[in-house]
Image 1: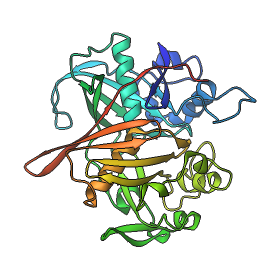
Image 2: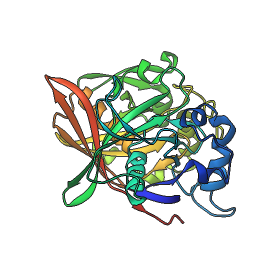
Image 3: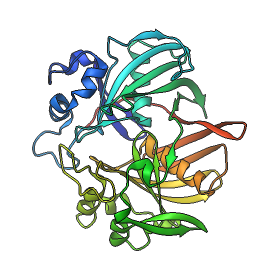
Image 4: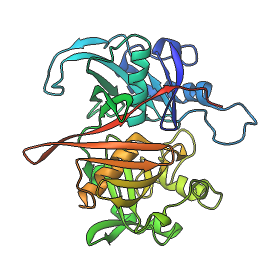
Length: 347
């Protein structure tokens, strides 16, 4: 079972591990596949997602590869200290186009959820849990609760994006490449490499939502970079050097400020419940939308007191991503992303 899917202009190829085996040898255990990703992930990306030679535009047909569900963990789950939701559990891997693994992807999880429903493996009426494996031995997997919902007449899913953390340590940023700045009276970070590209990019907030993000706030929507600018010959190589990991299996980055790379966003506050944003993903480049980026943008703005609504709309060229903050007793319990997905035919 395999297919391309789209969510807000973000495209992923989703496939069972058995079908991936036609292109690269992969273990049928999710944990083993994650820990051995260096032996198969880049080969699978190149064989499945790379555009034909001579095709102009982006290097890959999709923004990544979703592998799952794995047969060893497609089970009826029970509550544990890690998971308080009872229901069916499915395991998967999210492979970035540089061959690394992501701990979480909002659009990726939306697509994987729709794939499970479309293939009859999950029931849209029931909540279920997706366990995302990766190659961090300290925390080898995270879990996301998936809830089917209808919002503004659209059938989709609320995706559990966890509880974001903020600051240099949250993303492993080196203080050697970061200074201190402020935005609207709030303390922020000054990323030297970004400010050297554009002087107005001087106020950033680091956020981790299962993968690292650097959200740069701008005082007006007119200052947001156009997608054409982000992908231009003047900016693209410099942004790639910042975003990509020094360990990338594709185009390597400089590790400034993060050796493992970082996703870049630019954001402008439109109101107490609305933010406009642009996205540049590590290993990929300019991206029409990203669920984890939208979560990072809203969470960064909330951490600085720039928005205070329970649900915040993050507006990207690929579409609007509603972000919901679930609290109890004044404590943030989880951040939820709403999304919908459908099969696509990449060109």
